[in-house]
Length: 297
Image (tube, rainbow, N blue to C red; front, side, top):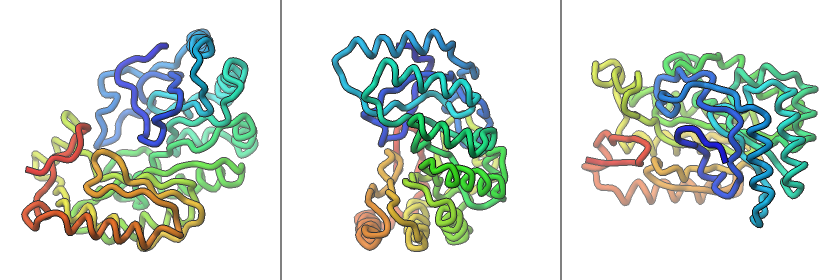
C-alpha cells in the first residue's frame, strides 16, 4: 500500500480501508492546522491506486467501506472519482460506501447531477470541515470560503441525496464569544441536516499561525470550562433528525457519542457530569492541546 507522510482519518473510520488517492491537502492554509505542512499536495496516479486495490483484494479481510485519504480527496475531478469508484467495486465487490475528507470549495466544483451520480456509485458520508457557522471565525481560520458558499454546498449535497458529516471546532472564537459561536454553529448545522456532527475543541498545534498569534497575544485561548460549556450550549440548540453527535476525539475533555434527537438529554447530562468531575483549578486552566490529546497543567 502507498502512504505518504502521516495518514489521518476520523476516529469513526477506524475499520474502513484507507486508500490513498491524494497526498497532502489542496488548501493547506488553515490558521490552526499543521497536519500536512510538510507534505506537498499531489494526486496519486490511477495505476498506483489500482495496484493498492489489487493488493487488498488478495488479502482475506473483508471491507464494506473505503475512506479516501489524504487531505481532501473530494478535490479530485468528477471523472477521476468515478474511475476510482469503479476500481473499488471491481476489486472489492463487498464495499458498500466510499468516504473521505471534503471541503466546501471542492463540493462546489461538482454539479448536483454529478453529486447524484457519485452517490449512486457509493460515495457517502464525506467528512466536511465546516468548523464554524460564523463568517468572522471562518475568516480567522482562513478556511477559504464564506458561510453563504457553505450553505450552497450543503443545499447541493441534500438535493443530490448524498449524506455527509460536518466538523465543528469548539472554542474557535475565544472565551468572550462562546455562546455566540454555539448559536451560529447550531443554526448552520440545523439548516445543513448532516448525518453526523463531529465536535472537537480548537487544536493549538505547534508551528501553526494560531500558535504564533497566541504567543503574540493576538488570540486568547478558552479554558477547559469554556470548551465544555460551548459544547453544551451548541448541543441544546441542535434540532436535527437521525444525526449522530460524535465527541470522542482524543482532544475532547468529556467524551460523548449518541443519536439526535433521542439522546440529547443523556448527552447533556454526560457533559455536565464530566464537567463536574474536574476541579475548579482544572476548569479555569487553559489546556495545552496538540495531536497527542488534552493536557492540563
